[in-house]
Image (cartoon, rainbow, N blue to C red; front, side, top):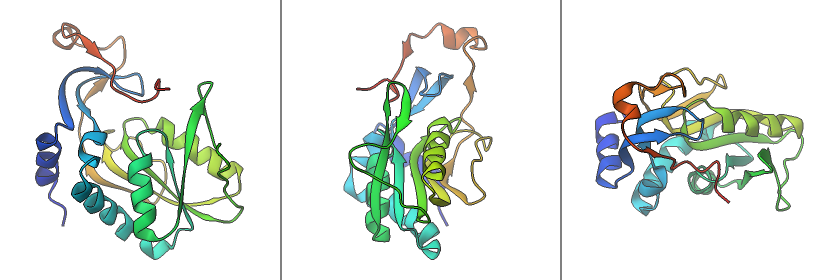
Length: 192
């Protein structure tokens, strides 16, 4: 059984769990932020988390793992390595999620979508739409941290290593004490 407190301690010890005032990739505001890249740079944690996700989906025998860029790429690639299947990623071009770089999804392929963190699930949903449009069969979604408080359920076979009750606010709902802290935007949506 996975010990949520032990995993959160791993996040804190690698400076992956941050406190402050953040605008998340989803556009929502939060007093906490998971910078998964900070924990996934450590091979022992990357391998351990990838094995947990791979073990969950191995019985479904995926042909392909796809992740949204940028956050999900490292985790998705290692999950694909553990499963022994191809790994690709989707990325933003002109604000829209696309599949480029010669990557393709073949009709009928069993596809696992892997992401590091979801709040609203917007990026994952965009990737799912690409997979479905290409004729792929989504067998599940694997996530390291679900900070949606269980509201971002996108697939009947969705697995998260850690589910957080991380509070987030719409732009017009930010409480005064959080609004007083300077905003940071550490997400990857606007990265080039």
